[in-house]
Length: 105
Image 1 (cartoon, rainbow, N blue to C red):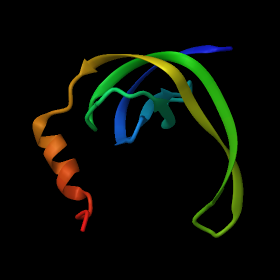
Image 2: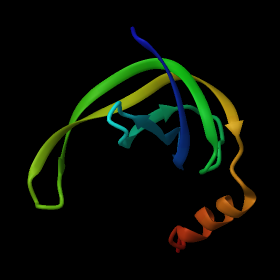
Image 3: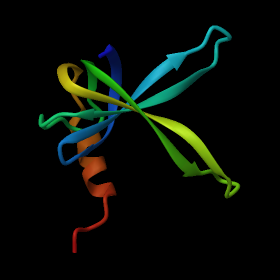
């Protein structure tokens, strides 16, 4: 099994997982976010910056792009995650994230 170490920001927390965005910088100067699913039972707020180590798994998936075409992509996941909080989410960001969700009723 391959082990990975990722530094990123929590974009969404759900059940027993997190969606984390890792900023990847390319040699030509451009950059993009690589999205990871991290499986953990830890309660971590959206906006928190983390360093994560764990077992890598990759799954092929399909999605529909803006033009309505079906495309193939990869889902990156980290299992058995060991998480270190680098920067906690600000209380303002946490409140905004909580209020941006739809009402549960």
